[in-house]
Image 1 (cartoon, rainbow, N blue to C red):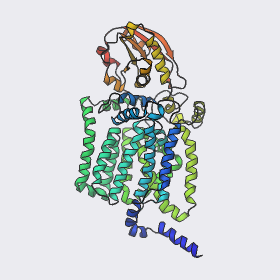
Image 2: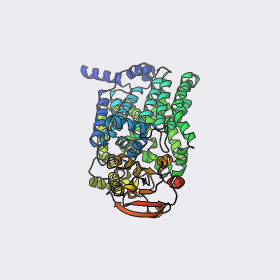
Image 3: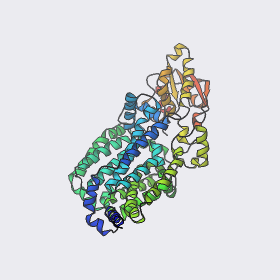
Image 4: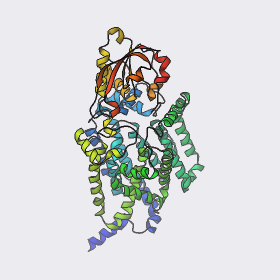
Length: 538
């Protein structure tokens, strides 16, 4: 009997049963809790996340955008038409340090997966969560399908949630009594985040609104937050000057694709599809996180994060953003929900509730994982994604293959390059010396730039997006080897257009299969004179 009473008293110490008690002593307790080390489970889950992506990161092939970032990384600049400059820099750094293999290129995204998992536990700790809340938050982040997808290949999306959540963690540390000078660090992290992806500006605006809407607005009366904003602006300034110098190409691209390339969904569809991104069984957890931040006496101190989420959600609905643009925010909401479960449910229902949450999440995660990353062989992936009707959810208006776009865009690139190389090498030596290789889109051009040098191909040119801004170079295009075009398109520029080869990679996107490789001769004008007609944004 005495042992039972002792256990009850210990439980009451860990999980207060009234609201008044934690409000009276909660500030000191939480300050102490936030200084404790993270649960070892969080670090174990982070290692598991890296291992998962390393194990399956080499399947299928290079994703279209991975090749594009690599091409941009060979021409470092402070801006690009369709993305910010950090990802190309990291791609170049990765290739210099780790090599050109598929697994090497995907190692940094695997590390980003670990960072997100650790940040989930870290934010839970800052919100007053103990080891269970930290572990549950990290577990939810590990299993979230959208993060499995983000971290499966190299892109700015893999790093975007890391920058958002580092900034969120800094805000929480400040709200928990940390030095206001931490706004300088917030400014630096957010500024680098903007250089990774411009959507960091949306999250920054959400934090600004959240501060204004809560008692944390007092920070606007101090210089540190303004100095932090200045640091963020200085980080962003080179990219901003690049945009101005080049006539705002990113805005031009946004206007070109809105309502055409990207699928526009209703506000209701946008909101319910968020549950698919985060794992349907985890949705109650992040909804509980919103409740904790907005309505729970223990969480309202951190309502800044909830207001930030709703601000970005509103912005995405107004601007018709892609459904995954809001995904980086769910790390903090899952963490908040885990804290609410620990403080409000587990303390009342009993310890059995803890594994009761983990088991269905794990089962659901195992079901969702092959939909988010290439775990199964291609034929099995086709059957599995068809069973779950994955094709019904897509973000771009374009014909689909048997595979979802995520997987189909990993296939066919090397076959294309080998077909182009065969035609190029078959040219007479005199023609080959003056020949250019022209690709219709940046995927084809980037593949040629990545795999082509070992096959003796020159750097590709294309009119698509950043390639269009780079221009045709100095070669007038007396002879061109072209891929991705139809004959009618090429006859606008050349009098002689001869089909020399065809390539049909199995399972690739429809626009990347059934392609003809043409040799074009007798240009009507030089490439430099006609380049404006080759350029397009999409």
